[in-house]
Amino acid sequence: MAGIDLHFHSRTSDGALTPTEVIDRAAARSPTLLALTDHDCTGGLAEAAAAAARHGIGFLNGVEVSVSWGRHTVHIVGLGVDPDEPRLAAGLKGIRDGRVERARRMGAALANAGIPGVFEGAMARCDNPEMVGRTHFARHLVASGAVKDLRTVFRKYLTPGKPGYVEHDWAGLEEAVGWIVGAGGMAAIAHPGRYDMGKTLIERLILDFKAAGGQGIEVACGSHSLDDMHKFALHAERHQLFASCGSDFHAPGEGGRDVGHTEDLPPICRPIWRELDARILR
Ligand code: AMP
Ligand code: MN
Ligand code: MN
Ligand code: MN
Image 1 (spheres, protein in one colour):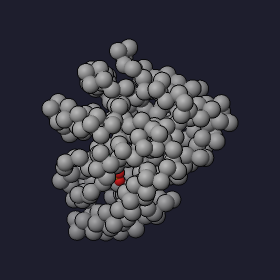
Image 2: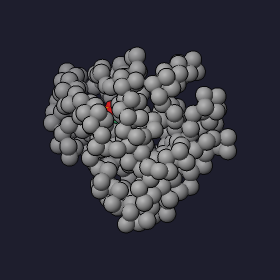
Image 3: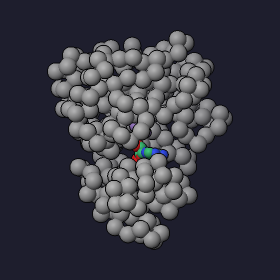
Image 4: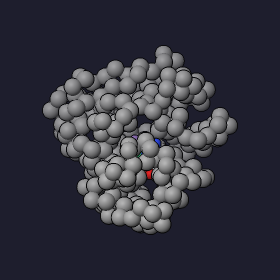
């Protein structure tokens, strides 16, 4: 939506800008409402909220939770959460605790494939070691000259079946949605167009998500084509889900949408932020 962006990242997870810098960048588009949604981590929210307040922009505390659903990894965005709520905080900490061990396995797998030193290179690229992720691996591989750009790193090395990809157990779907709702927030399925799932599987994901207490889905987002947007607007209508929108911005120059705006939602959508008015920090 012109003026609304409810999904983007800072250095607290795998973005390249500090929380203040990313809010300042978004502010250049004069938005009315923003939510920072770092992966598995709420550590940047206080700084981002303060920056938004300085600009007079509404702010929702957000988080993007990594979830394993069957053999699939899916991301669930939580909006309007209380980051200090103990079950949410403990759940996210549990996910973060698994990241370094997974990164070691990724490093070993890449070394086996003939590319040594990537674990160390990735660790050197994140502010917070427990937030190490595939993006840090990818940035190291590009900066070291091993691969020409991020897209190519993911395509050749970091996606299922490729040499640097390792299986990992994230949070359960029911668990993650429970933490978000228990912390006063609303949950939304992030970038549904990105999952390797046909219609039947997506519908099954939506039903499991709703059974766990989930109420939203991203319709407009950085990785959706216009076709995806209309497709998921119809899914939202069929399943009575509120629609969310977010750029999923990570870093200047890394492709995708810039922060601070998204496409306008199709008129059939019921925007999720109208349900979250009481949670907006102003
Ligand atoms: P992780 O949570 O460590 O598995 O890392 C997932 C992150 O990798 C996502 O949040 C994106 O930032 C990034 N990512 C995943 N796939 C791609 C891709 N094909 N191109 C660029 N970045 C990607
Ligand atoms: Mn990311
Ligand atoms: Mn995601
Ligand atoms: Mn994201």
